[in-house]
Length: 162
Image (cartoon, rainbow, N blue to C red; front, side):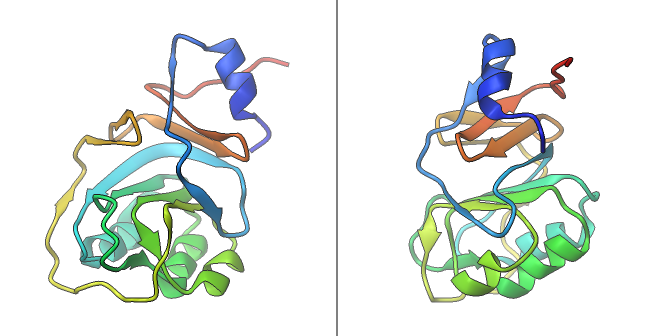
């Protein structure tokens, strides 16, 4: 992504929401953007995998894991699925595992941290719903922009003319 979040904030101050800066960057891509697809789960990553396998290429999967510290919702295998499918990136209000594998994958991942325990596999949760975390509202179809300066949201795709 050649557009920087700071530039978007400067050009569209009334159209962007700044997400709480509590997320860490994982994966090879440090900047990414795209339309939002959402999943809400607690300690179960079946719907995370399903979304990674089905959402359109270029979309960013936003997972509200309710900041649970009980287990990881993403590991190396799921990060690789996202990279192979050409997703824009992954943002998790929760934790990942397989740190080195995720960091070596050609995908952008933002999460709260790492924990070694894998998740349950029951398929519980919700898909394609508005999420509220990080002092922001994440609506499916809205846009997210991520880089080293942070995460911002907008209701539409933002463009800066050169």
